[in-house]
Structure formats: C-alpha cells, structure tokens
Image 1 (cartoon, one colour):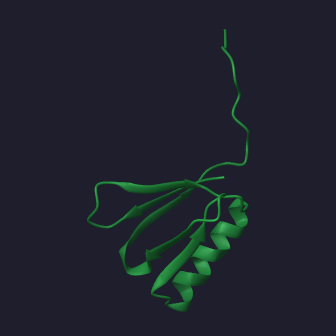
Image 2: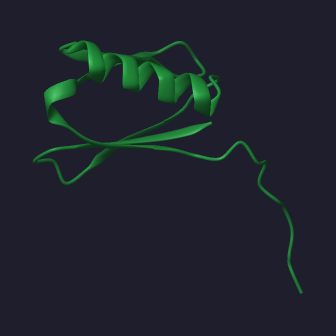
Length: 74
C-alpha cells in the first residue's frame, strides 16, 4: 500500500510503502487526529518508523490495494 503524506510549508511529500491495509492506515490517522496526539506513527514494509507532527499534516493519500498491471495496452 503506497502512502503519501503532505506536510505544511514543505514543497516535498513523504512517500513510502506500507504492509497495512488502507482501512488500518485510515483508522490510525483518524484516531491520532481525534485524540489530539502530537505525532502520527506509521511504519513501512521494512519496519522503518515515521513520526509526522500532527499539527503540520496537510494531507494523507492512501493508494489503492489493486496490483499494477504490467505490459502494453493496445
């Protein structure tokens, strides 16, 4: 699952692959924002931990769970 996170006042975004499902990511982000947490904690497929300041969060884009097609389309 590809995750892209936009951060306020930053021209770049944080992008990584996660083993979690889209519903798990959505739940983690929603709970973090609703509880007033200072940081959101997300992990990628290789176990790296990302701490994103909740106050600086612009958006979170969660990719689809479809696999990409390989090849040429006529």
